[in-house]
Image (tube, rainbow, N blue to C red; front, top):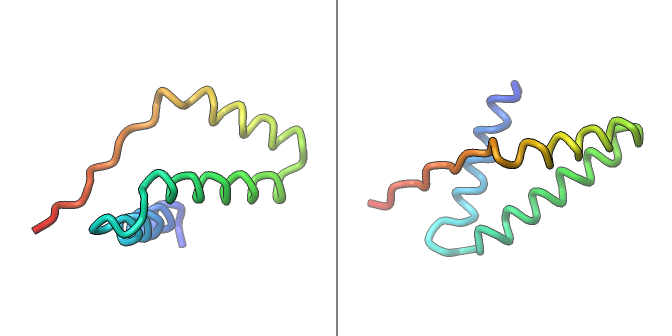
Length: 72
């Protein structure tokens, strides 16, 4: 899968997990963030992990909200 395809799959998974209040969106987000950090920590050498986490922190103001799904 391309990064865009992976992004869309995770987007769908998140929407499904949070649909109709089935799960707390913040719990889902926290879980995904923890998983991402675990993957980065496992896959990257320490200096690159530090660069990645610094980049995440510095880009926090660039994150845009996603459009919630329309409920019919």
